Length: 417
Image (spheres, rainbow, N blue to C red):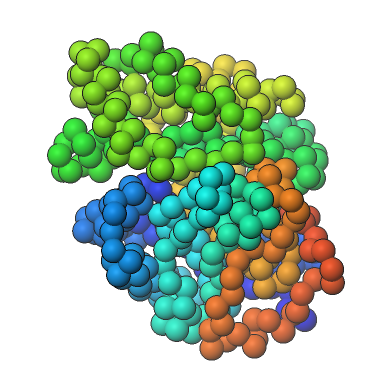
């Protein structure tokens, strides 16, 4: 029975900036999983691909043929990212790929559907590697939000025996995982906090007429003046007040939201940099508001640990520190995991969990009726060798989190470079 898999995890986030890919060694000890990050790389999308993704994810009316073509094109790019990382890492003995795909529609509360593009069969055929994809639909089918999916892995990498931590992802959308000290995954709480970079990036694209895609280094926000009254008004939206479990996405914080924010800003005589500063402050304020409403009543927060692209924005990080005086704020890099790599690592672990039959959603976070094995498995030429381990037991899948000891070991291995 195989107890170790080397997995490449792939992540394409709401910001549409590129494909994150990580080689991760995942070990199984009974029903517990342990993970070590070996190497990581990002492959940026060319501008034309970004525009295609933004158009479809933004809700534009596009023919089915275009959606199908985009799914195929993404599959090719995911396969290319896998091949490039294998060459770079000289990692020929890869067993599995975990491919989140790219979310273009997510409506778990209304129509109860979610759609991620990126044909996993293309990845499996091009690379020969068994590929696990489509992690969200099973949780949605069980009445859950299908998000966030990473708390299972956050608990492994970042849980501490003494300090209560909030792991805040600042991708396109922000999500938080609350990790009480020394508790199991059943006590973890997680939900989407609101916009991460999505509104900031949308404003920069709009205000620069497409010449720029993000506020690099938070420079524009640093030059601008925050309109605190406008931030307070924006925070009155029901999505921020809604009790978890909850998730959100480009459906709410996309182009229409950006357009409305620009209109409101012009009425209030805000400059372009003021608008970017205000959007950055909204991200920080929505995180702080969520912690006060939904986390602090559960217990203290000693430390906030940031990951995702927004962790590289010093203006946003500074605003978060000011908004969260009750906790220290640092990035996952301080714990040994590069901030940009966390979600790619997560989908590598979730893929291994799928082939081992370990449930990896956290019903307390997503609202699903029960714990489930997530993902759809597309066999590669190595399928027989990957699946010889068989499922874990019979009946209801176990939902134990990966062990926290490996989180410390992962940090140590990364610290050695």
